[in-house]
Length: 454
Image (cartoon, helix red, strand yellow):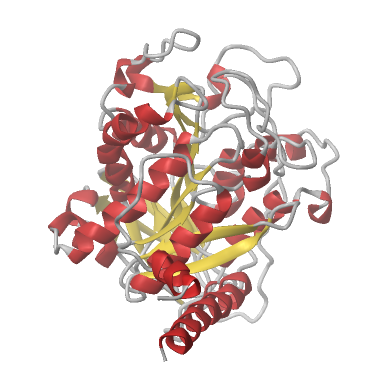
């Protein structure tokens, strides 16, 4: 066997042979390519862009329809390694991919239910450049920043800065990795997300900033969906082996139930968590998963077992609440219909996507919805919402609007901060371009392999 053939065959070894160690960026890329090539029916590999130094920001989508959004199927995402020296998330997400694929291939009910009901996107490293120069010190911050020396978790548009009329950077002035995430959020209708960090042991939820001005005071900054955020944070902390105890790390905490309101912990401007919630109507948590930013390799198997149940349980929470479509007076699904829940005044109202869909994560209870769309009467309905995660589906309810006879329609006022809801058709130009790139890589690999074997 030639050395070239041996090298190619080594890339095609069974997907699940994944060592517990820190894989470099090239190894992660090869692993994701391998998983995608071995499992084209349930995985799809795409890139959301490149880092400052030109490294691809790879995302693996998993589900029974992995290549594009399907109406009624919520989109979920995990993001790791935003700070290059906080590395456990890279390992956990690679292990999670392997576990989801293994469970599906073994016909295990939990994996079949998750992948049949959810499209899961996994980004193992948002800051590959930072990882390349990261120090293995538990507490120091070498490698935290991107190649330009910028903290990516301070680089997003900030809703509270907008409310205070502070001048913000233009989108094209932001870091490459930040722009990639912003474009990603515009291309997919994400419903639930988590951002994996290290250096503490706690599930942190919005808001990270507030409208109280420049002086920080120890007090929570409460989001309209605070009850849901608390539930989501506890869903992770109590399914984790020890996070719920709240006092695991000697240099942070204690945290009651292993959770915290972000602002109540410390003030953070320009964070990805708040950006997801305010502008992308995606509820996101920040999960701090290890006291040490760079745990020793020998600890990785135990850390995976501590987080495995929680990572899976958290994905299942994407099925909270209500989902459905909004139809106009002609029976057509409409984009940008406003779907509001009484008592929850979001900075940017939740609106339907290009398929007329809405998703609202809500705890069980009775809720009054108000649905509005230009040229139609405002529709108000009260719904009794059950607990959906147990059945791997939120309650489904469609809203059917009635037209207004008058041709004069008043434009709806847009709240501050300025809300941008632009969505790329059919799941996004970035994903569409990268789909072809992924297929090209796969076909090229097969072609070369066949030529060597002939």
